[in-house]
Length: 415
Image (cartoon, rainbow, N blue to C red; front, side):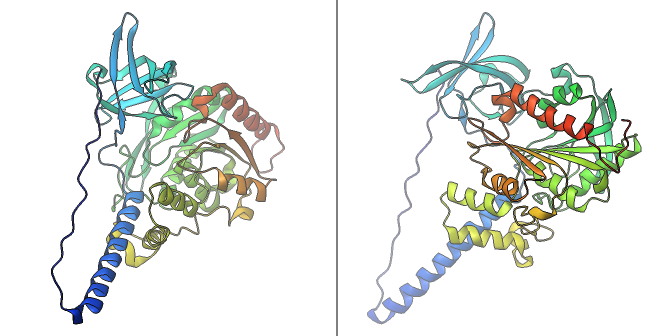
């Protein structure tokens, strides 16, 4: 059994020199004030920069305690956590994401030694037999082909260059295009889970990439805009869809992809062609998410607020690396609830500890005519499908069919 223990670093020790009585008050006060101000600035800058900077190397915080070679294939033994013991199928990425395996349902949960065993259903890449650390993901397929779905690789022209996308033609409603927008730190693989549902509805599906996701061309600053700068790349995808025969667009967004989709609903020149939003674990209000993440990481409230200021003001650009400041208020859809007029379905877990459900609840409560919220439990961030794929399919299908069957001025009746 392989196990790795976190190393412990000794706490730094401080030393001081004797000071004259006359300098004690002023000297210590000035130094302490400078150190405190410097520490606050440095921590706020790090936090702000971390939020908008794509990971060069994915963090692999999950120890793979053992890999067992059985008659049927492989099994992995993992530390028992909320995520590793959750029901459903997941991916295990390892070796800096060069390795990718699909894991099945939990097989053996040993309460005594705090471990759980999961069967390895498929190894897409890498040598899982030598894997020591990794990360779990709600992504379960490596390409649409792994889900038994034929697709076409296409290129979407964006302002930064051509962005690869997967195109899956529809049948019954082939002129209705579902554009799938992945979240922060993810890529177009995130939307493969939805393809069975979208195919069953007869829609054409387009799984896109966008700036700084490691597949599409990067922006000049190489920074996330939290939805505020990414939406033009999805606007380009809508241009592509309309040029290929689409007459109606439905946006499916996961996590930050939800924030991107909401920006399109607000800013797109094709907003009248967007008939529905389906948002999974969406970021409705970045201010709330940043505050939550600061608390989760035990960052003092003042430091978290200063980090938000750095992201939102020109003076903070040299610390964050952003080409332009972000308008966090513009990304707050709780405050802008009355501006959302496109029918919206939100699927969000009460156990999402990355993007809390609170703003989704508030948006649905403030705009019940437009927004429908479906609550899940036991699902981590954007893992509602993984925990209960049948329910996800049922609720999304009912919502989309209701849209397709409704009398909607501005959309062609024959799709």
